[in-house]
Length: 105
Image 1 (cartoon, rainbow, N blue to C red):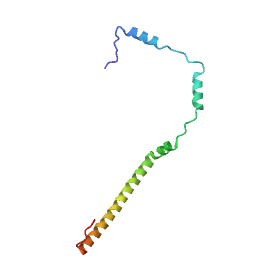
Image 2 (image 1 turned 90 degrees about the horizontal axis):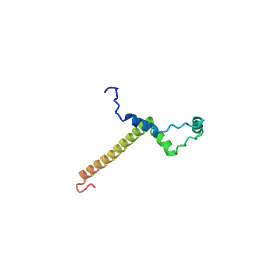
Image 3 (image 1 turned 30 degrees about the vertical axis):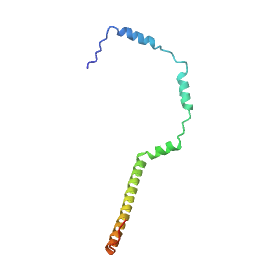
Image 4 (image 1 turned 45 degrees about the vertical axis):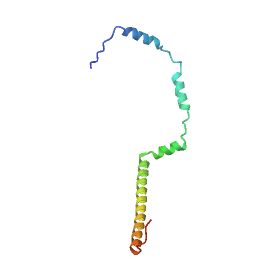
């Protein structure tokens, strides 16, 4: 695309209308100074305990440690349950081999 923009015949009228619709008001004396004074005086909003906790937990280091901890706990719980199920199955097989009338749960 080229940088040349062709103007249509009504563009001057439209530009004049837009400029008249947006009046250029002067700011009162000391306006900027007053705005900055208000900003400096404003007290920072104190974050609630939930916002603080969420901000702390969502840091990459803590989130990574938390995820790793959850994975290790889930693996440990799965291993413990599997060992328990294996012990029960081994016991049921032994009892069934000794007593053929035994029906496991």
